[in-house]
Amino acid sequence: MMDRNDEAGKTEETQKLSIWVDADACPKTLKEILIKAARRTGVKVSFVANQPVGQLPRLPNIQQIQVSTGFDEADNLIVQRVVKSELVITQDIPLADEVIDKGAFVLGPRGQTFTKENIKSRLNMRDFMETMRSSGIQSGGPAPMNAQDVQRFANELDRWLQRHKERY
Image (cartoon, rainbow, N blue to C red; front, side):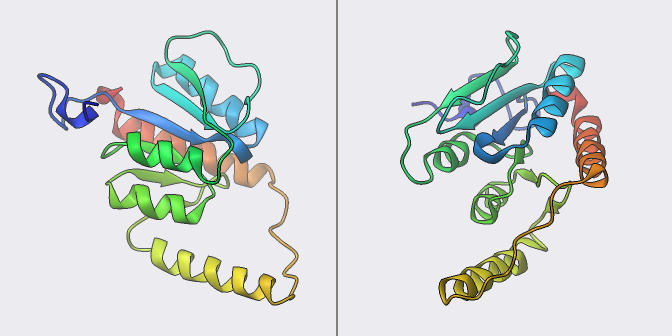
């Protein structure tokens, strides 16, 4: 299988960029924002999930990739296919860590950006909270998404699209 970075005649600087969505837990509102962005800009958006993600428009730049139901199958496919400077939408901190190592940008569903500078502390906090939950301590979970979260997500998505508009 040919690596996307080795496509004939393309360098990292000229390669078309895509958006990869960890779609198993992607809120409907964000899916709609991503579809509108794909329609408006022509950027390729791939929704990767263990189950169908629902109705998607029939456009050449929007696709659904359904993987088998095994643990982390969607994450593994994203890590395998993402290339430097592409955008990954996920709330999965270990997935974010892996794709950041490959040079990708990561945006969480609440508009938070995950970077080399902040991912290790977020990973440590996630592991700490998981240890607390496994020992019986209930943390209550995150607050429901609100309009500010959605706006922050849309703004960060637009920033990425603006920075990379010549490459999608």
